[in-house]
Image (cartoon, rainbow, N blue to C red; front, side):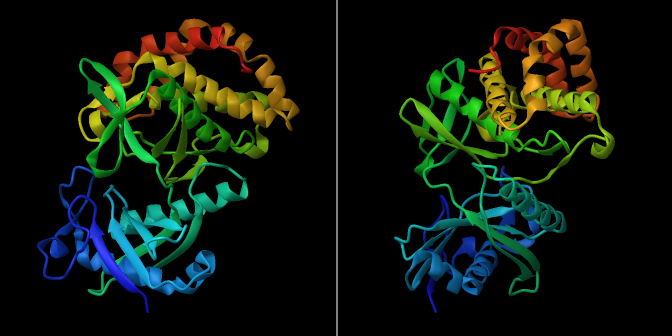
Amino acid sequence: MAIYQYGIAGVTDSLHPEDSSYTHLLPSNRELTGASDSVGCGLFLEGVGRFVENHIIDLEKVCGEKISNVRVTLEKHGAFYHPCRVTLNNQCALSFVVNGAVTEEGIRVMHSEEKSLRLLWDKKINNIPELLFSEEGLLSDGHRVSFFSATWFDDFYEFHWSFDGKELAISVWEDNDKKKSLSSGQVFDLFRKAARILSSAYDFDHFHQIFPWHHAAGDFVVRSVGDYVDVRLITVRQYTSLFGTDPEHADMSDRMDCMFYFLWNLLLRMRLDRLDGIGELIWAPEEIVVPCIRGFFDAFVEKAVHREDISMVLGVFQQIIESMGKDGLFEIHEDILSVYHPESPERILMGENLRAHSDLVFDSIMSEPVIK
């Protein structure tokens, strides 16, 4: 049997039962407050170890060698999952994440994510995790738990808006609490590629989309590559339609309406984040709107290669927006805002900026070539 070593990122590389962190309860959120249904960190990590051991033979086939050492590091905490990074033999090319859920809501969301990831991989959507193994069981204290493992994106890091002096800048959270600011060109590339991932996954016929997603939750990660970046989406909580339209009876007008709704909502949510990931809700600078539009067009131009109807839509895209006018587009944005809870901080912030944002979207689309 392999030797298992456990750690908690930023706390200890070697966790033992006599350590105070061993019995420390799992936080229930990113702010590290609250307790996640009274599950200790040590028991949780040992549960991850047993999950890995249950699949060790398959992992050895992937590595091409006998696995003698497994390191499990509890990386962070979310509203639903507690992600752990697992490395094998300290050198195997395969490192992966094990997400664990210990609450009923977390387990429900996890089952939805497993289904969604399989659907997206069947559709050959890139830049998302590849599901490896999953199972549900009990921790040693009898607490119900669900795990799934997926590929780990090496050298990719979480990012958030931070203040660089008096200006907002994208700050990448690298290892050992180091933070690195991206250049304006890298920020443009980041948002273009993030929008492209979501737009590539959008199903023009059945209206399925990845939703919800949040920058504040660290759903996207980034890796610097010279003057550019690579981007990945690390979680897919749900892949379904948000619309009441029946796809079996939808005509081209319905499909276009749903596509536009997807785009407007995407552009709104791309501007939401929390300062440094856990601070106050912030509204991203207007410079990110054009790259997000570019990312949408990148994905739909690719879809149009094999779809004459999508090609037709792109051909008249700007004419349709022009026919809406700025006032018409603003009314549509008001309709989108109406589905959010009236007292939610996100809705309030979007509402404060809605007219300026809607006008910016209109002007950007009218001046932005569809194919670039």
